[in-house]
Image (cartoon, rainbow, N blue to C red; front, side):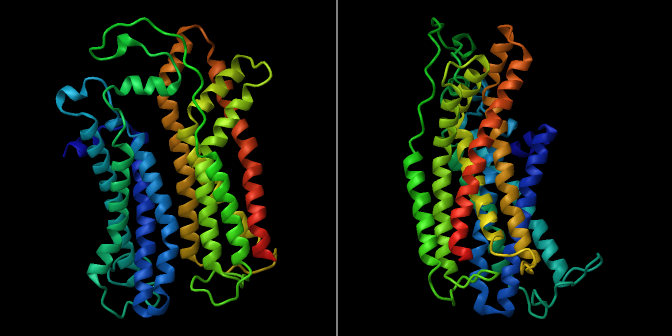
Length: 405
């Protein structure tokens, strides 16, 4: 009940992000129910379609966790522990809000699925997909509810695991320390005043870059090796590819994992490059900010890079005059993956902006012009695009070579 009360009083933008989570959950739930409907009429290929639903499922869970991290109603604040809202309770509230949003989306997916089957009437497009979804057979209620519960359960568990250590004993000090600014002892609840120390050194580089590069190279190697296999794979891909799609999928998964691990290190390197050769105030501020936020925005950047490279590589399978055999469900899955990964990056960027709000306020109190902060943000965005765009193109080109051979 407390989660619902906090949710009603949340800012409109936060409500919109929750609606996006519900929409993504509805899309994945509809894909899973369509897989169930297909399995009722075609049992042989049901496992294949279910496996392909794992990619949009993972993207949706990642987006739900990112939205929960930026939810202002469950953000740790000074004084909440005195009324029983400590870090553990706030984590439970965030998980509950995620569960409510995802459950709402699953309910919408069930209603839309029953409507297309013809079980619900009185609206346009009644029973338009009755033959595809095996409307002549009774729907197994247990199987449908189990599939619909996958997204809420996984998203809730992932949110609880991601936020269980957030805040700690002093959330304000943790946020200020993460932003790279000097802590303000007077702002801590009950803390003893202490003399302000010097500004901390730049954030250390994340340690996942070598592993990310190794996994990316291994994924490309696996994909190249798998493309030499024969046809008849258990995971058929649409189009002209006659190799081993199961191996290609495994190689792309390794590549995506490698880019996700390497993303923070690459982002940290971008911040370091901005500060070489006698930087001015703008480049120094932009570089230090990128280095401090590398772990927060680097992983979503790496995942988006992997998704876009996969889209570009898949697009290379077809010539300009080829008919693309992608159906509406394939288009829905691709839209979910691309949309959720892009929205996750935007949400992580918003979270980083919230974390460095104290630093921005300090700069303005010190007399820094507002244009300085805006220019530094533009420099950060330009640097990230200049590094990750050719990286995406290079990975896509290397992945497309065995597919188009």
